[in-house]
Amino acid sequence: MKKLIFSVGMIACLLFGLLLAGCADPEQPPAYVTGGEISVSGGKISGYCTDDGEVAVYKGIPYAAAPVGELRWKAPQPVEPWEGVLDCTLWGANALQNDASEFSYWTKEYIQDTDPTHYRDGIVYSEDCLNLNVWSSTDKYKNKPVLVFIHGGGYNSGGASCEVYDGQNVAREDVVFVSIHYRVGVLGYLATESLAAEEEQGAGNYGLLDQIAALRWVQENIETFGGDPGNVTVMGQSAGAGSVNALISSPLAEGLFVNAVSASHNSINRDWQTLDERIAQAPADLKDLTTEELRALPASSLKGRTLSTGGHCVDGYALTGTYRETLLSGKANDVNLMTGMVAYDNLLSSVYSNASKGITVGDSMIVLQNYVVQARRLGDYYGNAYVYFFDYNVPGNTPDTTGPYHTYDIPYFFGVFSAERAEKWTQADRDLSRFMMGALVSFCAQGAPQTDPAWEASKGEYEYMNFNTACSVKRLDAEKAAIVEEYYQLL
Image (cartoon, rainbow, N blue to C red):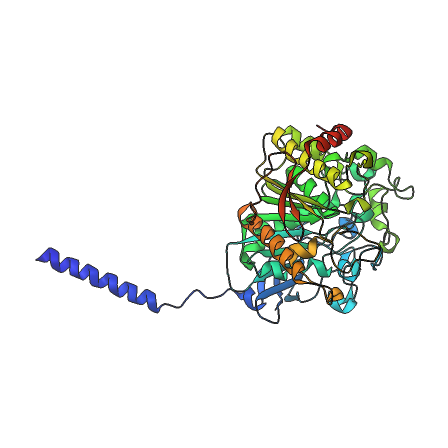
């Protein structure tokens, strides 16, 4: 009888506990979902929500100290604390560069915002440019995958405020979207004898070190926005994709991301300069200056200054080899990869074609992407790789065009349909975007795109997902592939 009474008592306690649990308040939403005041490295910030309340946005968040004065041409330093609440409803400054404007085939939506009223303190360009932006959905509070996007611009220009880089629609799919600014031009990639003499400063790779600092900021702060620091994907377009290739190669970026997306650039056939080569190409008026003299130069004298060969160099610190060398040596960072090109990316870089053999520039680009897959496997296999090719003819191109140009895939990945072409978008565009954004979002979440038809990991046999009206898996003809491989002879 005593045992029975005890059992009944225990059951009563359990029922009472369950009743209390049922009456308890549900999980309280974190402060970020209102765009309200939150704390990050450096201090408190405030943002805003989109009109529908579905996405919280914080812009221009400093992720490192301003690289000015004594910090110019040095590795980024920890962010300096600020007092009060920093207003993060406006963009932070783009890197110092020439004024942006529409050019060639790239209309307004592909160019960073140049309206000073959209920037904190009205400053569009500045040396003080190490800032980032965060979009996060307000209906899911934690453990969301994170996408960190790196803008293009030939390592000399560009910014995160381009309309096509808007992260809100990706965020609506419960992926925390982060975009960053980094140093460009001579401020990002100069190397001189005096700068190289400074111990462990990564001379010639300051822009890359900025990107690594931003990824470290994400590791330390992204949980505040509902993101999972253990599930970060880094993505870049053009020079941003070249930066992704460099991040995969850099020992300093180990453990900072698990997936990577390289859009419209492939460093597999590019020999990054050595540090000595980068030093040799330093502008004549800068090459013999001391570090003190370099840092005393007025910023105005450096605006728009570029290098004949920009981007990364093998400095022995941030980079110990080229993309190809690092992959083949087994020293690259172990991440899943989505990599692809746009049909007319060749406007910006020369690739092999042979009309007599029926080989197109697209065939050549597919072979180069396949080389990446092969190099990853030869280097002891780095996870799965997924190759794509975008040849959908985006509406609104200038009359003399016959296909999509550099950057034209990005609006489809991000679901951004600009008012600049409002009367030209069709259901076919939205269907393609739904497919591509779905592939990207699932890749961020799981390290593998979930699509129908199925997009399997590449086996290095020239297979790829073709993005067009009807997306499908294709394979390059083996005879054509062999001719192109003989031309490149990379592996």
